[in-house]
Image (cartoon, rainbow, N blue to C red; front, side):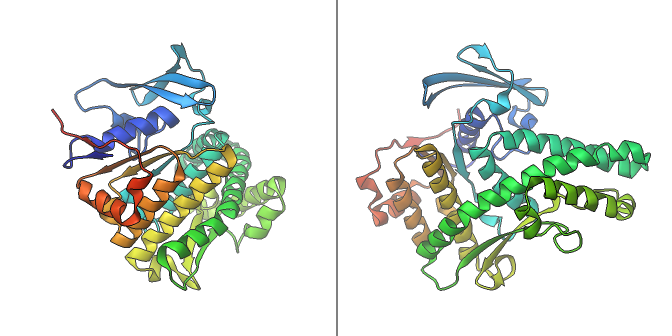
Length: 350
C-alpha cells in the first residue's frame, strides 16, 4: 500500500506498473501525456515474474510513441509482448462508468478482452485507423471508391471486436450478478447486455452475433452502405463497435437512470471481480491488481467487502490511498490482516 497526500506521485507509480505490464497507459488518454512537461522522454525499467521466470522490461516513451526492450533485446511487436501478464486496474474514474458516457463502458469491455486475448488490441487499432480515415473522407466529400476502400476493413475488424466483447460478456455475466448480490445484499439483480448500434434498423442485434463472424461482417458492410447518406450529412460513421454500448440494469430498470451511487459503484466492483475470476480460471493465477485511491470512494460496507476479497485472492495487489486509516479500518472489519502480508509505504515528492 502506498499512502500520502495528493500530488505526490502515487498514481504515477500505478501508471508505471500498468505501462510496464501492458505497454499502454492506465489513465492517460495518450502516451505523450506520460512524459513530464519539461522532459523529452519517459523511461521505465522493471522486473516482471512470468511463467518463464523473471524478465527485465524497459519502456521508453518519446514523440508520442513507445519502444520496449525485453532482457536487453528490442521488441518488434510490443502489442503482443505480454499475453501472459494480466493486469486489472480499478480507479475512481471507473466508479462513474455506469452513469457516464458509452465510451467508458466500451473501454471497460475492451480492456477486459485484451487481458485474455492480446490480439484484440491490434485489431482495435486497425479498426480505429480505418474509422478515422473513413470519417475524414466523409467530411471532405471524397469519391465513393476512396471511401469504400475502408468499409471492408471496418466490417472485418468490427465483427471481430464485437464478437470478442459479446463472448467475454457471456462469460462474465453470471459471476458479476453473483458478486453484485454478495456486495449489496439486495433483491435487485444485475443485468449486463450488449447493445449494438443498428440492432433494430440494420439487423445487428444479438441474433446477428450468434450467426458467426462472416454473417456479422456482411451485415456491418450492408449497414455502412445503407447509412451512407446520413453519414455524409453528419460527417461521421454511425454504426459499428465504436458506437455500441454496454447496458447495465438493476432488475428491469436501467442503472444509468435509476441506480443509486452506491449501486452503480457496486455494479462496477462486481464486473471487476468477475473479470478477475475469469482470468484466474483461464490462466491459473490471479492477475496483478492496481487500485488507485478506491477506498475513499466506497462506503464502509463495500470497502470491507473489497478488502475481504483482496485478502482471499492470493495475488499481488498494489493500492494507493490518501488516508491509510480508510484501508486499515476496512481491513480490520474484514479481518484482512490475517492473510495480508504486505508493505505500507509513505509517498512524498522530493
